[in-house]
Structure formats: structure tokens, C-alpha cells
Length: 539
Image (cartoon, rainbow, N blue to C red; front, side, top):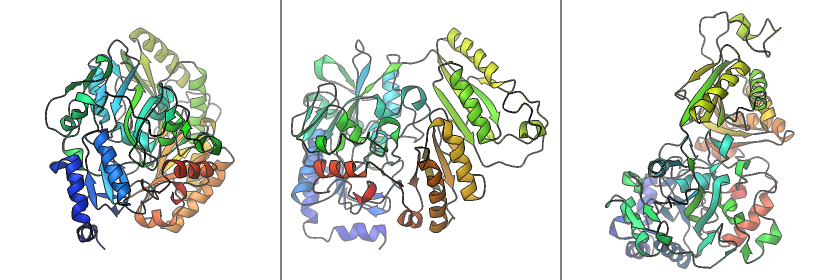
């Protein structure tokens, strides 16, 4: 059945018009409708789309779903709706586009509370007015903060600041039964407790900011404690009813997809009526909306650096990258990011290059000596005061050798994924010292160079397999790579793939924390109403 036919058929089911009427009462006439062909999650078509104007309206949507035994899948900006596993069923797509805004107290500038539906570009524009920034630079254009956290997505700045999930101070979220819960600095989360008023979409005037986010006015209200609540320029817009979100779970911040003890606090904790502090927030990271619906997040913010430079060097082999990264980290130049780009090589005329780094000294067959074109580049971002950055850049170029170049602009590939729509996209996570082994294993298994890009300084990289590969071929490549990574405490996750591949291959690989995840799902969403099937193990 086509997506359009499935959407049309939903209107014929018993009670469909009544559900639509109730959603319209909750969200307002422009913000509730039957789903269309574009309202899919990894190929699974929704029946309704609801865009609540605040957390209490979102809670009403969840209570309506519970009363009628309907499933709910949250959606952010829609930049990666085809990532991850398809949900078993999507009844209501809960669009967070109106849960938007930034609450920031200028005189207490270390944190900001941000609505889940706020695009990151609006967050940065709003904070930038006071000389602050959120050190989050994910590759997804137009991504919302809620989508980033739900996907545990991060960018180059993960090297210095950790993933966005690691920067959490607190969250407000809705449980599967519609209860609004606050966790974080306030202490223990009591399920069913009312969240504090004010802030993004909270009680009082701030609740109305959702309408601003949907493009119905200008951008100010007042949050709690007299703090100025600002909905940044460009929030919402035409994306309010656009498609979906991302899945790219990983262990960098102890997100849901992490291997080991980071997932939850164990069965003993999950069996109680309360969870300590940010344990719940960590559970929500990477959960794809399968454990709760994010309303807002309180994040650490930092001053915008006065100076930034990118020090780049051509590289030829993964082993050379390994040696260079080790040298960079030992040089104590405090990099903000250490990024690697290894594209599929394009044949170019040879040029003879003098050996300029110990990694090639005494190796006459090295590509840098024979004149073979560079396979890629290693780029180090330095941030800080102008004189300090200049001094560190000088020391870093001495470490990287004569081929190092200092630039005041990022390379074109910076902060972009190496894969395109239709590719099978992989995420590799391994200790930084073993990343080269993972790249070699991937090349050997694929039988050819594979484009790889990511944070070499922390051992997180993305790779692209051609979408034309058969599911069986992709599965064999994954098996080979994972066998190398498991001995190095690493893992390889499929974050996106064509539907035939997604149906056949194991997207996550071995997950030691799966029993804890099952406990978390049973505790937080016992009736499996939230994004069922999106989590590992079909949860």
C-alpha cells in the first residue's frame, strides 16, 4: 500500500473523525490534521499530525492517545526521519515545532533553558545577542535541540565540550501517560510531579510562545524569576509540519545507545518510583522519543570565543592519522575539535612532497614521499583569545610539520556527514587510539576505500557504504567490522540505510545494556505507546 493510500485509509477507521476533532480542540484548527504522504517515520505513515502549542497541550495529546490506545512518535525538524528502525505503528505524530524558545538570564549566564522544538540556529542567534553560545554544532541543517538530544547527535565540538547530552543540566519531559516531569538541578524526579512554571512553554505567558514559534508574531515573553524568555528569529516557520528526526545513538555522553553501564541506573533503580537527577535525562538521550517526549532542556552555555583558527594537514593513511592525533593530543594545545576527512580518493597527477613528519621519515615508500596525492586531511580547531590562539597555532604547526596550514575558515567538509541520501550510513565508536584499526577493517571488509569523516580525537567517525550494495553484502561487512571493534571496546551502528538493508541487517550490533533498556521501557512506557519498535531489540 502506498503512503498516500495508507493515510487516506486512516480516515475510514472507526472514531477517526472524533480523534481529529479532539486533537483540533487541543492544538487549535491549524495545528491538527490527518497525516499526508510526507508524514512518515522510516517509511511508516502516521494517521494524524498534532502540533501542540505548549507542554500542557502536548500532555493532553498523550492523554488522548492513552485513552484510545494510540501510539505517538515525536518529531522535530524532520532532517533525518528515515534514520534508524521503522516504528511498529505511528498513530499520532507529535510535532514539537511550537515547543520553542530560549530562556536565558544574562546575569546568570552559565545555563539556558531551551524549548525542545527550537532550531539550533535560532538558539545560537538568541544567545549570540549576549555574547554566548551553545557549543553544539551538529551536521544536520535545521535540527532542533530536542531532535539532537533524542538522537544523541553531536558535531566537531564534542572533542572539547562533549556531546549535547553531556552538557545537560536538566530536562522537562512528558511521560507516556502525559505527566509533566522535571529533572536535573532541582534534584530527584518524582513521576507524576508537576513541573515548575515558566520557562519554555511553561505556565503563564510563556505558554503562548509556541504560537510565536509557528510564525504568528514576535518573540518575547517572561519566564520564571523574571528572566527574559526569547523565541529566536526564524523559529518554526514552514518546518512546523515538516518531517522528522534522527537516530545515531552512541556512548559519548552516556546516551541510551551507549554500551555498558551508562544506560540507566540498573534494574534496582528503574524499579523504584523515582530516578535520581539526570539519570532520567541520560535515558532520554538517544531514545528517539521512545521513553518520553522532551519539552525543554537546560544546557550549559559559554562565551563566544574571540578567535578561531583551523590548522590543517594532508594525510595519506589511517596509521599516519593515528600518529598525528597522538602527537596533537600530547602537545597540550587544548584543541576544541580534531576532525578527520578521508574521502574516496580521486586519481590526480603525482607530485613529489618532502617528508615533513616523523611518521614518514625513513619510509621511502610512503605516499608523501612518492608523490601520491593526499587521501584526506586532519584539521584541528583552536579557540580562545587572539594572542593565545596564535601562540598555540604556532606550536601546533611545529608538531604537524611543514605541510600544516593555518586557516581562518573551516574546510568545506567541516561539520558535514560523508554520506548522501540512499547510502548506508555507519557510525563507528572506538577509543581514539584504535580508530585507524576500525578504518582498515572497514576497508578490508568492503574491498575498497570507504569515505570516513569524524572526530579523530575522540574516536567517533561516520562512514558511507554505497546504497547499491545488497543487504547480504552490507551484513557481511558489518560482521567483519564489528568483530574487530568488539575486542577494542568499540561498536558500529547503522544510522541510516535503504529500506531493504534496514529490514535485513542488525542496526545496532551487540548491546550489553539491552536488559537495562528493557527495564527502562517497561518502567517509563509500560504500554509501548511511545515510538514502539524504534529502540534496539524492537522496543
